[in-house]
Image 1 (cartoon, rainbow, N blue to C red):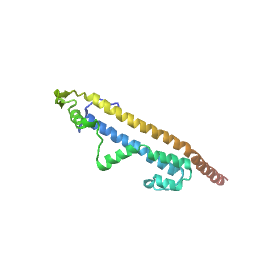
Image 2: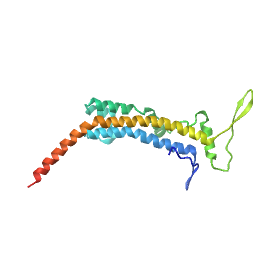
Image 3: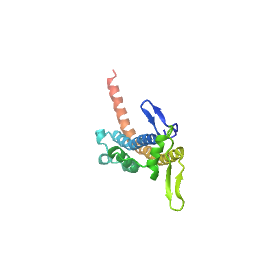
Length: 198
């Protein structure tokens, strides 16, 4: 999604412009990255067979039942990771707030993005300099878009890489418990099968 650059995207419902595409990307990234934490908590609840309703699985509940400090420490790190993204997701999904995509020229970026691919000329931006008078700014929409995408890619890759590393760590510290529980079930199943033999 981050590499796409064929704008506007024409659909039967209308065009999708660069600014809208970035918002779509942010929605997907925020949802996917923040759900990793929830999936890790659910995995821990399943490994330990806690029987907690999935909607109620959270760090506080897990800490009540899991005695393994290594597992709890990793879960705490997972809970603390990507906090800024969870906060942004909450602001966006629960309060309808959106981050500025291009700083002080954010509103201008939205206007210019809507002129992309149309016969309407690109709006002009200028500022007033007391010594030189009105100074026009040249707008390079693909360059603005690339800069925004690059910043998103850097931010989300950093957070995503950290979550992946923590997820792998959870697998490592949770594996002994899973193997132990699985072995007991396997051995129990062997006994049941041997009873059924004539």
